[in-house]
Length: 203
Image (spheres, rainbow, N blue to C red):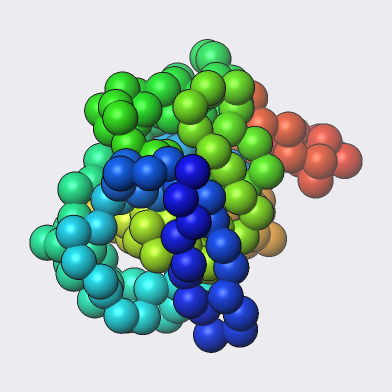
């Protein structure tokens, strides 16, 4: 095993990487929302890109700027799983299927994902806060986040009552009020339990 030293602003961390294998980073966006797709992205950087970090720590403008730099400077794959499939097979299996597809696509690469589990997909390593420590995972975080946000912005035109362009499907107070008022749309994950909706009369 060879050690790869990755410098961050706060500290240097050592990540074990298999010798002579390129690193492929994975992250996702959309595990928690009440509506819309799950998006999982994988990135193999071809050159260094400055400013990469956890997508949640970047402004929307900065994410967009980095998005185009990443797709022009990497091998990447972005996988969407729609809400209907999530309702049918469950979120964990949806994630597992995406990870397996990425593993098959990047066969022979050293694959690292953000988080504390690989969802039982052998051959994929995980690291907590990898999206803020490892450039490839940071890049994947940005691709997943921007791709999902752009989708929700576009699809919101078909569902003007719900304000998806604002909350991107997450369970904000305003979003829950709209569900209470109008019921579920075809974009909602009906298998997700929303406590506030069950505290009173539904729809």
